[in-house]
Amino acid sequence: MVSAIVLAGGFSSRMGMDKGLIQFWGKPMIQRSLEIASEVTDDIIIIANKEGYEQFGYPVHRDILKGKGPIGGIHSGLTHSNTAHNLVLACDLPMLSADFLQYLLDQCSEEDLIVVPRHGDQLEPLCAIYHRDCLLLIEKAATSSDLSLHGFIQCNTVKFIDIDENMPYYSPYLFRNVNTIEDLHALERTSDED
Image (cartoon, rainbow, N blue to C red):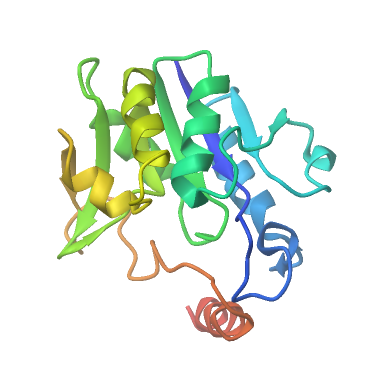
């Protein structure tokens, strides 16, 4: 059994509005993450510090450690999770697919603490699997001066899943995230062309 922890997007300062609730393909962007997560698990929680996320019908929890960015969101998610392995998803990766998430889960064994996709030199720690046993490590990182999730990944034992065009369910837009309105419109146009 695995849980999905969907992170609603923090301050969304570059977007200028609540990232998770912005419309993408006619629905709130977080809804896309919730829909694909629901194809691989029934156990889903949302981590959000703003109002409006109860509408999706899943438990919503706020950050326990405030102002810590994504690492704080993962900490809160693992704290509230009831399962050993947890699929952590950012709300701003609308081109992910349930098939890819299942592929990622299939690469995870019982003893794996953290499983992170890697394409080239890019790591994707916000589309990754975290075991509850790394909660204390996450908490230590979240209370340190370095809140970098990439730094945390590089300092711990991680199983990397290398992703390239020869892998199942690959798309060049798979990990394309949305930080600005321009990103949003560009990705919508690209998707329309495919």
